[in-house]
Structure formats: structure tokens, C-alpha cells
Length: 239
Image (cartoon, rainbow, N blue to C red):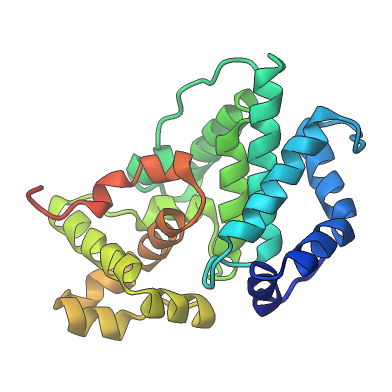
């Protein structure tokens, strides 16, 4: 499925098109629901109803700059299915996950292997959990910028001054939709604009480019689990 953004926005204001769009994309919904439930799903299953609710929610809440509709819809469908399965007591309780990819010191060379193994173990334990789905979904977004979730360990700020500078850059993107959309269109951090607008050192923006992009994408998207690790960014210094 490949849906034009303008068409989805048009559907939001046309009930007839809305209903037809849902019917036309039933195979897509069933596919995502079945993957999330890890079994074949039909329209008579409860999981189907949950997935349908997620798809309808995606149509209703989709906005310019959100990214591809397919990815956005898949995320909401999976989340609804997970909630449905948990209600059926098919899921075990959540296990707390440390924000290792945002807080751990940068690793070099062979030291990256333990990090990858640690994350793999956490994701195995948390299989089918919403956090895993968010990591997979946002990982697809990061691909457009030519980096992966693992790359964030090397670009995350450590010093307080650097953290404040990066947070200011992220807030600037979140508060300026045009600037955020331009970043997404070009797949590049608007370093020159941020440098001039915020009077931040260019060196910091370049060194932590991936972190700033990742934080902006997570906080502006449907990633509540990952976003909870970055919530402090939204606060102004001193608040």
C-alpha cells in the first residue's frame, strides 16, 4: 500500500471516501493485525476490531509531517491489538526498560557488541510489547536520515551544557512545524538555521545531529514509550 498524503487529508473530510478507503485497505489491516497477534486473523476475531479502530484512528489523526501513512497506521493498529491481547490476559506484565540508547556512554569498536546484545536481550524479553514496536517503527524513520537506532549511542550528549543546547534545538524544531517539515523533506538537520536562530555552536549541532533529529521525530510522533525518556527536553531551563 502506498497512499498519497494529500489523499489521506482529503479522506478526513469526506465520509464516503473514508468508508471506501477502509474497505479497500482491509488486506493491509489484516496483515498488520496478524503480525501483531502472531497468528492468522479474520474479520470475525476481536483483534480485527481492535486493528480496525487503530486504522480509523490513523486516518483521523494523520497530519502533514507525520511521515508515511502506512507506517503511522501500522503503529496505531499494532498498539490497539496489543491492548486487546493484554485485556485477554495473553500478555505478561511489562518489564521496565532503561533508556540505554539515550543514557549509556558512547561505545567504540568491540564495545558495541555488548550493547547490541543487551538491547537484543531486552527486546526478546519484551517481545510483542509496545516499546519494541515503537523501536521498529521509528527505526524505519531513521533510515531516511541514514542512521540506525544503535547509532544514537555515539551522538547522545553527555555534558549538561551540551544537553541543554541539544534540547533547545529539539524544542525549536517542535515549535516550528515548517522547520520540522523541511528537515523531513530534505532528510537533513537545518544546522545553519538553528545556529543563527538559537546562537548555538555549529560544532555541537553537527556532532549531535542524529540525536537532535531522533529526539524531534520521537517527540513529534506517536512514540509514548520512547518519548517518556525524552520528556525533559520539552521543559525550558529552570522549570
